[in-house]
Image (cartoon, rainbow, N blue to C red):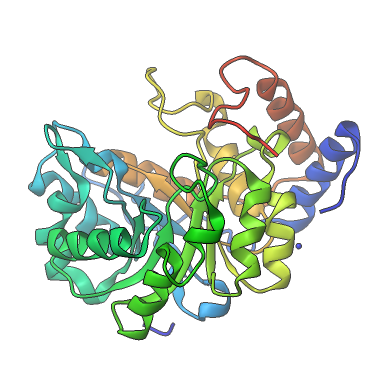
Length: 339
């Protein structure tokens, strides 16, 4: 594989965000066409590629979030079905972490390993470290390599970098004796290609990671509701774009929820939620968690069918997000702080 924060009033922000969505449009929007599934419904079109910032790597505009693979009812063959179907749809970005799953249900990485071994050269494989120390990060890297049947990763994130309990002392984490030091050494040895930082909360903390000059990619919680609270889009990504970092969105549908939808965003906003994320300037990829082929194909079809939002549509979506952001389920939904 070859691989932009200004402070404004809330009213201004809503209006400006609507304009941003409408003006930016979906640079890779496609008209839907293609074959049909056995059910007779249209088959998803192939997902287009985009460049992952300064890495220069071509990745799919939609990525597979593999946290759902850690659920107890899913086995190796279920995971294999999803991953191979993703490849057929043009999806090459695969995101996982060591703590997806548990001993009882099985870990995502372990369930993925047999398939990753078969398709390693066809995917951009991303995992993470939850350890603050040099030794702890190397331990997780070796564990993930064993589980995933690989000797290298395309990228490793500092996992949920805003989490103060996980990474209490940034002077340690970002030092040569900390997690970043281990990732730098792993890159030097060819174990990883790129270094990222992921996170759901504490946006301002990410500037410390950017100051190192060693972060290639950011993956943050970005959706039309939390733009009004955490707002990684302006608080962090405005700077990251200027530095040509790769930008990856997660929690596009709000994250997992115990409701009939399976995600936090109200069902009626499913397509618009994905459209919002893919409209953010500089975005390379939207990671969407799926546990089966049906969920995968629904998301892929949505991405393929997306058309640019009009100014009015963007404005109304931003207002709807602001209203939701004020409700109890969404206040500090990913934890504090939100600044």
